Length: 79
Image (tube, rainbow, N blue to C red):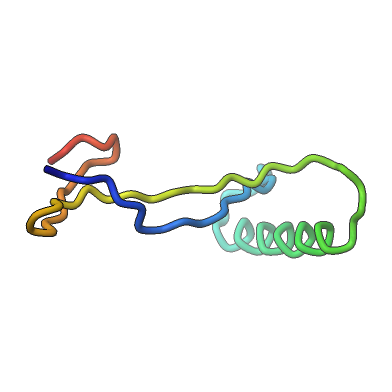
């Protein structure tokens, strides 16, 4: 019998992505800037402006008897 066990937890924030370039280096630089700006905004801003932070839980299916980890594909179907 496989049990669904929580193995990791992290917060995920979707930042605006620059659409004017396809260069991955420029995109990374722009996202780092946006992340820094958002961090400063959250630290210093006192208003009730809305922003979206999603909590992502990662699970694994592990046998409760032998601790075998069941492999699953992207859709969660056993392989």
